[in-house]
Length: 342
Image 1 (cartoon, one colour):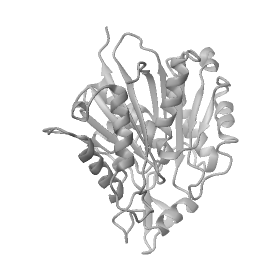
Image 2 (cartoon, helix red, strand yellow):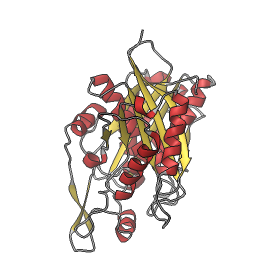
Image 3 (spheres, rainbow, N blue to C red):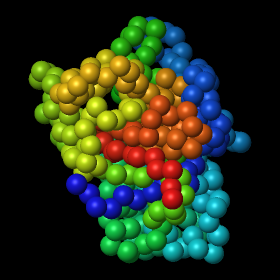
Image 4 (cartoon, rainbow, N blue to C red):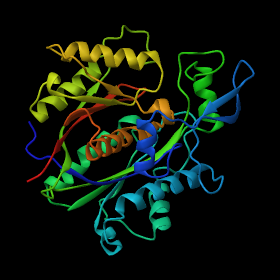
């Protein structure tokens, strides 16, 4: 069981349905969407649909990722004096190295480009985390360590990703993983950027990260092995152990599920392994139905959605589990607990 639980201080979010955390989460809560046709055609001759962020200009490549990231970061750091930004480490989450169509320079250039755009040099402990959908929870682990060891008073976690490029879309479409006119078992590609600022307790109402867990799935989506959700169950179980609670004490699940049957089945199997007593209701929120598959941004989006839901009072309870699954073996989970303060 972990003895230290960092708190979320502020958040930022840029999605296809809103350019701020409040507007995005309001749209997600209302099940609104903003699907558009991409420039790409599927195997049936129809336009592939996706979720594009409505930025001021049609930027592309790393420039687009940078613009989305800096927008979310500025929103997140708005309560903090700019003179103090240089004392904050930035943990930047990006697409995994093995993903088809991954842009060049994400690890070598993007962090410095974000710093230049914001006109700030973040603390030297800043780093890039290229682990895709689980990267947000991996970043939480690193941030907790920095705070617990008093190497920083605040840690900024940010993520930016887009699946709306032809090399990426083409690879997923060829693998029958996109939702298209000829395939119903798939997702719509999207893009987003998210940011959260972690720190110590302020004494007021805050959402605390009380447990983190990780696992490895022996039967990932591209394998032919029987699916048993062992990795996700292990990740959630480890997070529950750190938080000192049981699955039946969790009030809400927020997941990176984006439409593929494999991941919905995995989430259901993991619950069957962990839930030992009957619950009348156990909601699961999957925001991808509104903003699409957002890759490396997914983990932090879950955190932002949890934070806004608790502070706005529409979360169904005070304990939330956020879980994420990559296309490889990596699985991750985080337990959040909302405390009203002293």
